[in-house]
Length: 503
Ligand SMILES: [Ca+2]
Ligand SMILES: [Ca+2]
Picture 1: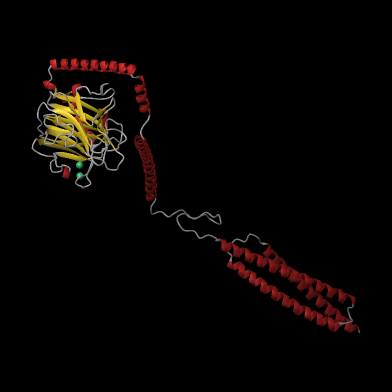
Picture 2 (picture 1 turned 60 degrees about the horizontal axis):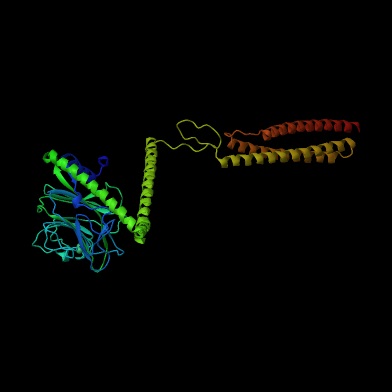
């Protein structure tokens, strides 16, 4: 009951059925109404306890009820009527064909009398009494609802409605594709307390647990002591219809199971084991008698047909794709989980301002508010201004040096000829004075400009004070020079007046 852990509607239902079977119902394998490989058919081709006919062929591995040729019909029926009321039949089969569409289909029977081996209803008799479960491949009524599985009950009066695919007559059914599956398809048909149930395994996996409910029909009354049978037919289109095993169990309520019956069951099981041993011995003999044939058969077993290979490869590919998709899905879930965590973190920080951009000037921002800082272009403008100031200062210094050399030259000239050219000296002095005044004005203008620029940027700390120092030094020098010159002029005027007195 391990499968019951998986949560799935159908699984729960199937588990419930199994629980009923395990706890309340005693199940007994009925080998006289079963066949299965290996050694399904004996060396003479017969299947023990069964009779087959029409185009059916039995081998050691399966019974080919109808081969993939046009208009084939075949059937296999139990030799003896069954002697129990409730039963469970597990039929494993394959319906395979090259075409996208196949025909006609396979039928499971439980009828009062054995049907024919070449009848009109999927290879067996029409107007049957009892139950027919049809695996109808071909869509006769063109309603795009085939392959279809259906149960049709008949009291011997009705002809099967092939034209409408039995839709007017069916008791229950389900739309299931059973053709060309990688693994054998399986039907578990249970008849217990007048309830007919069909569980279907679609052959997409080899997992024994993968049955799905096809239908459940109540109040189904079947004749007693009927016969089991399987039949199949092909038409213009043809599939192979192979039955791999047919396993019948009788179902008994536990309370009604006397000890005698249990002993019978053990005895029967023992009989079955002996029968299997006998089969093995027969097979050994057969191998000894026909060594070549056995070899050929074995070699055949090593190879698979193109069809089988193709199906297997498709199925393997699909399985891989499924694995990859599942892995991708898991990873996608992880990513979504991470994203949601991130989003929740972001929403927790919601309403707060984003972190401020990196500081250009390296100043620490005042907490709690927006801080205006020095921008790049302001720094550039500041450097430009400074360079201008330095250039102007150099100009001024050069101008002063020139002025000084001129003054020195005049003084030297006057020292060489103190009395010869009084007028010219007076004129020179005046022109020098006016030049000096002009120069001072120029310096004042420059100084004023510099001071103005400095005032504009006074909030900026000047990294270099060389310009300021130079200007101050220059002003001091100018003042000293003026004083000296004025003093010298007064002194010279006095000397000239004394010299005039002298003459
Ligand atoms: Ca049909
Ligand atoms: Ca149809």
